Length: 63
Image (cartoon, rainbow, N blue to C red; front, side, top):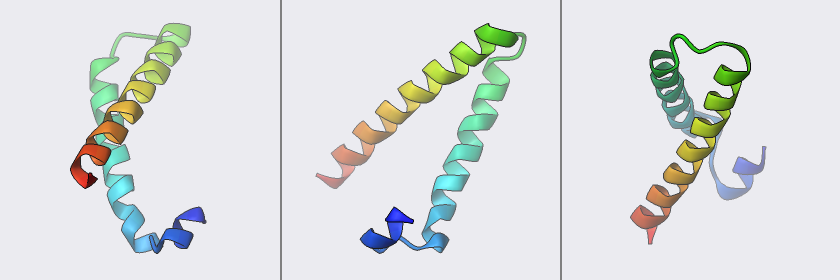
């Protein structure tokens, strides 16, 4: 894994898994009632927005 090159070991990836589980649970709750293409579009858009937000927050906290 490319994470290993930065000293991030499999045990550190648990935090990513917990965050993904939490995000999936939130999306599952918010997207009840959507189906098919509408659901796929919403999941993709919200996932992209979440990625951008998470990247911004991490950068702010580190710098």
